[in-house]
Image 1 (cartoon, rainbow, N blue to C red):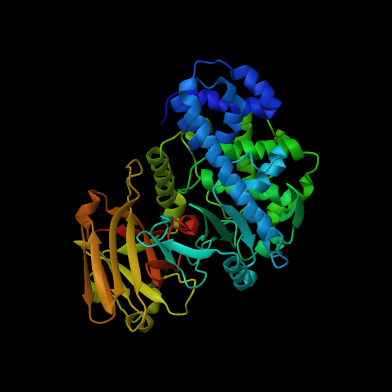
Image 2: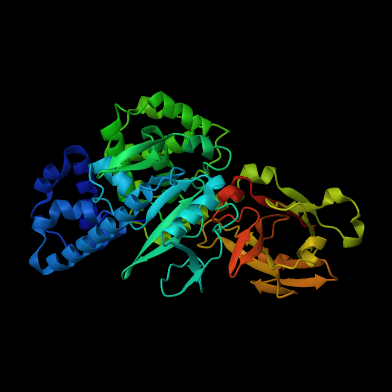
Length: 525
């Protein structure tokens, strides 16, 4: 857990709070001439994506020895903002762009500051309907864009090492985004993201109704299609919640300040009853409730408690709720390593909770010959979101080993494409710094089934269609006759090049797994 904030962290928090209350001038007057370590503050402004706003406030107070580096960064960000906006202008003026909604970036900057160039923009964010993908892909390629992934790491954006994709490909089977589109402009690249969903929250069931609520916004003399006010609010809330509570980025001060500024500026314009109704329709009332509480913690009662209390927790909601040991203000500056440790603890608590144990598959110690393998009710199966075939498996235990026997369907055995099955056990030690305890995998690559083991245990192939994974019971270091083990089974197929799609929840990009984790309880006699 972090200790107290350092001086520069406190200054950044206070700048955000004062800006919310009084704007640029009031904030400058309060923080002018403070004894600041400008090198530390610079790094914090970049990390928290607050650079343009804070620079605008404090530029006249920056010492001469730092002024040039600050000015260069400011100019670089402005130039990218102008370049990105010119692309938005070009795309928005096309007659066939109606199915593409522009969000965040210059649009949010216009909404918050009446200026499209204040907010940091690293790319162009858009929402689309999947039915329009072919049309939008053609539109973008007509304008000089190409879709690509990294050659070495598919998610890496190394401009000198990109693999151009022949057709639009999702980052994962259930992912909300396609791989990025790139357009070269001089020595710079403009990156455009196509999003078909809003993370894991608003997906195929609701996204069309969400996108129906669009409008044209005048931005620097250009009509740009974006979300209406109420749906912009919901989008900002969901985006903040996903970043702050999962692996991707962690909480950032700019997102909290922007949401607070949006609520403060449009409080009388927002249809609060409609927002309440829509949050229930989209099954995200718990997300709104938590984010409103976070805003009140950070900005001291920005939203009335009576409004917060309208957003009740519901069993219909499907978000993963984590309990943080660290206060929000400290989490803003938490290291990636410490944040991951907290996430791991949360996930392990969920896996080994009383509720999960109540739903665990119970295994008794017996001899293998005692089991009638022909009885299908003994078998478990790996969920598959794409195909009709079923990958089944059977966990068993004897006095020495815990065994998972996998039975490959003929579609995998005889497949012409590459696939992989990854088996992870979840560390039962809640306080440890790791999540995955053992990792086993078997995969078809270049026509051959290959095996890999990381950690104590073994994998063997039995005949054409059976794979057995064994974990020694001595691994558990427990004298108890009752052992519990949570585990993940990930099924992936190769789509193109080095791009693999996961066909079930992997617990990483798709966190549905943790809402109902797989768990066995072993009775050893």
